[in-house]
Image (cartoon, rainbow, N blue to C red; front, side, top):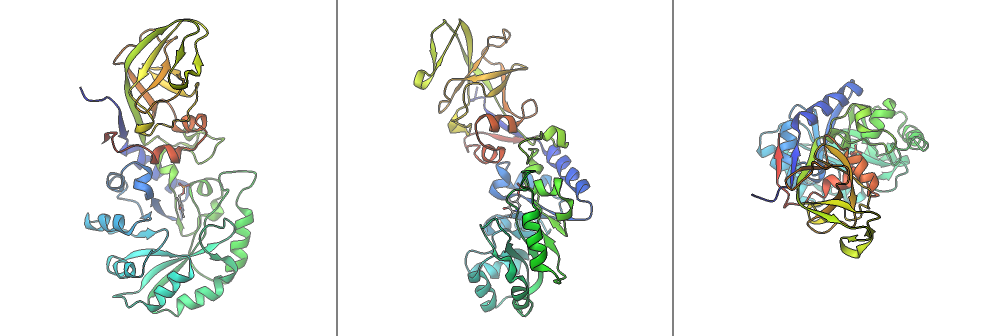
Length: 356
Ligand SMILES: *Cc1c(COP(=O)(O)O)cnc(C)c1O
């Protein structure tokens, strides 16, 4: 028997989540964000599942080329634009849309000789202070791009830092965006998953949902289930050992879990080398043989221990879900002090991934 760990990708869940977002943003087109190997779900399988999307957004031009070679004709946006001027030639040939966020990219666009002009998203920094031009430069930059023979259309783009935090919200950035772009009659793309849900006024011509497609909640305080999302990934394994330990016995590296009373443990074939977070503490939820239980002790490279005190039916071979349909990835992420994005992206290459 092969090692029992596996990540299953639920294609119908991806499709359900895409339909849900379209219902939430009925007047917008959507770039399904499939960067980082589709948040760990696999670029090609995710793109195929979402073939009816209005467009895709990702980072690497090589990945965009893979999609074109497979016959995807829909709009593809490179979220960080090009990293060297030669890539503009490919963008023109393959009809990739590009973000333009710095002076160097503007200069490359001025100097290029292309087979046809490009659709560009002018990325404005409205306060996140990561990528983008100072928002107030929008009129000047739009003039410059409009005069550029290599530019076919301009969409105004910005990104929100706190759309997932109700107290902070997006007004501080949206107000600045609106003031800076007043009078420019151009399409806009602003909303990530959180903004799309909570601030319909940000939806504009194009939305850019990522995490919600994968069935995870963008909000710390609201569950994916409550938002109507279905999990697109289940990470499952099996018990490969059990231990009966005495009161006072310790478990795992560091010996920092000590049993208060005699108890039974299960050992799961899943460790941090599979992408399970090593910092998940004792108490992190795990689903074993149909029951919810807890992680015990430190996560090892290839294994972790779970409490079987209340699951007498569990034995070697019993099914385990680390996250998925029975246990939300958001709960596991919260227990481990991180977010679902990081867990999805961290699934290790050694974990077999299957679509279903
Ligand atoms: C990753 C990303 C998104 C998607 O964000 P989610 O929170 O996953 O919805 C949208 N826009 C940009 C520019 C991004 O980098």
